[in-house]
Amino acid sequence: MLFDSHCHLDFPVFDQDRDVLLQQCAEAGIQHICIPATEREHWPRLQNLLGRHNSGVHIWGALGLHPYFLNSHKDDYLAELDSLVASKPDNIIAIGETGLDLFIDDPNLPRQEELLAAQILIAAHHGLPLILHVRKAHDQVASLLRKLKFQEGGIVHAWSGSDQQAEAFFRLGFKLGIGGSLTYDRAKRLHKQVSNFPLEHFVLETDSPDIPPAGLTNGRNTPLTLVAVLAKMSELREQDSAVIARQMFTNTRDVFRIP
Image (cartoon, rainbow, N blue to C red; front, side, top):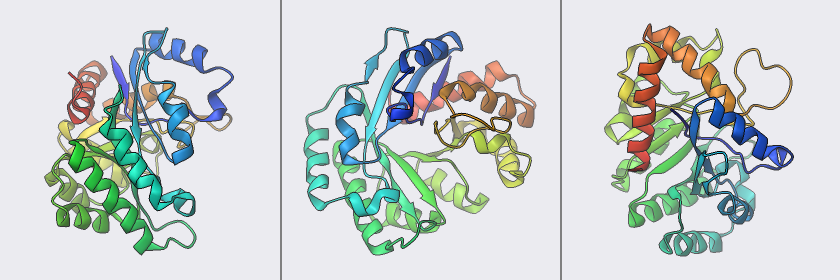
């Protein structure tokens, strides 16, 4: 059984064949998927997808404001997010996708930090983990989490930090999201981290339709490529893929507190 801890199956690129794709996921052993929202306008369409699909795949969700769309986010959305989460909607298991991104044009770090801090506090208030998007800002995010004494843990998705930064997030109760980047030969540091850190610190993800694995040169990425990520992790760790799959499923269920 596999759990894609991070994909954007709500995006319009999947509208034409989402049901077929979910059936293929079920047949491939991908039984759980978590979809984190990126913008306020996406929250309703995300919620419409949540729950157990006809295929048997269970779709979970997270609500948040992504730093990439910084200029689209209004302060009112934070109050709306807090109110929506307070209503305890079914199948919402985290706050995210949120974080800091210093790789974008005109990053406006103070505004990003303001939005992230607010979402950290919302997550803390409601006892929910975070799904973090972090680019070139791992130290800043870890520092803010410490400053706000956040204790609910979560996932740093599409992990790209150093060993020291990874250990800082481990101490904060976070796991590292490992996806298609792992399958590239150039990802030497990530290969070493996945080989050397204890398996309990990782979860699998695809970030589909983004971050395709090596070899997928045409077309969109889908949750089906989770199998390729698992195979690469098995190769690097020299462990049976079934053993790794079980641990990854347990890790993901634990971080999202799914019984």
